[in-house]
Structure formats: structure tokens, C-alpha cells
Image (cartoon, rainbow, N blue to C red; front, top):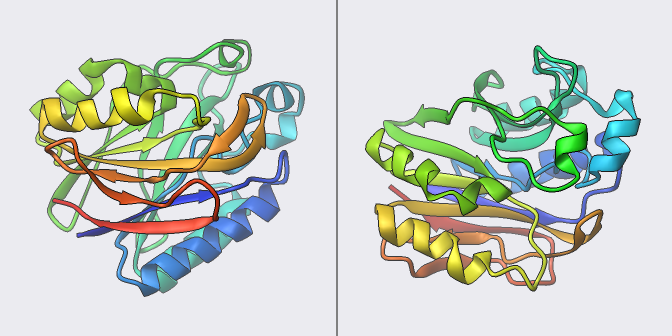
Length: 237
């Protein structure tokens, strides 16, 4: 299976603009054979925890009509989109939530980030369950940024029969995860690891790009570089 790892600079607080970019990337990646398209943490709003905390209108529902352009793009491209944003939970706060929109436009899976980092704890509710979905006979695991610092998530994914571990993240250039987390998770647990990251300024710093993938031996098999928005393709499974 071909998976696309994406990177772009989200517009802070502008869901409609970010949805348009996401939909365009899904269509473009699908045209090049991608069956799954992976995006960064909080790609729908930008990584702006304080802004989200103070702006209730930025919180989405699972079936939010603002996501319809992404659903349409998935149907047109025949691809699943792994998108992340603030999504309502059963509690008083939203989750940092990955929604997997399937090739038919329906919801394949939801995953709420389990390990919150820094200011995130003031704005979001942590999740309590692992994220999984299957497509074309291949089983995928979901994780979000700081989650990846906890190897037990990848260990459980491998034990649960997952072949591909999808990481939606926000990483700056000085983050050592590129060398000390993602390739290690891949090598230690025999997984393909696919990273969606951001470019540009955000509440945490400046996104460094580098979206891409590592093979089960821990070697890089795809790298989008640190400057240009877009996507890179990797064969997984």
C-alpha cells in the first residue's frame, strides 16, 4: 500500500482554510496512488492550544459539516485521510483527536491523544483508548506527537497485529524525535512508522517539516524535507 505523509503551514484558527489545503493534498496524493494520507497534529486549527482553549467555535464534532470538503476529497481520491483537531468528547474539554475519514467519506476511526504535553493539559481532555483501523487488509495504529515518547503504544500496536504506525505530530528542528523516537519505534517493534508534521510558526515554535516514513529496520524510506509544503509517498505493509 502507498501512504502519503504531508506537511504544510496551517492558518491559526482558520478551519475553513486548513480544510481546503487538506482536501487539496488528499486529492493530489490520491492521484499519485496514495491510499492513506497522514496529516500533522491539530492540522485543522493549527497547533494553538491557548487559542483553542479560549475559542469554543474551534472545537469540532465528529460529523462536523466543516469537514465535508475532506470527505468529498476522500471519495474522489479513493483515499483515507488521517486528520487531527480539537473534537468534542463526553467531558467538558475537547480531545486532541485524530479522525480517520475513509475512502467512502465515512468515519473509520477516532483516536484521542493519551499523553498531553505542557499547556495542552489546560485545554484538552486526555484519551484513554488506543486507536486502530484496517484498510485493504492492513492494520494501522494511531498516535499523536508526545504519545510517541511512550514506547508502550508502539509495543501494543505490534502485539495487536498492526503493521503501520501513524504519527501526527508538531516537531521543530531541534526535536530529537527524528533520530531518537520514530526510527527506534520502527526498529524495536518491526513497524512502518509514518510521520505527518507541520511547517511554519505555531504556539510551540516553528515546524520543521521532515514528514515521511521509516521502515521496520529503522531506516528512513521517505523524507519531505524541511522547506516545501506537500507530501511524500512511502510503500508500507
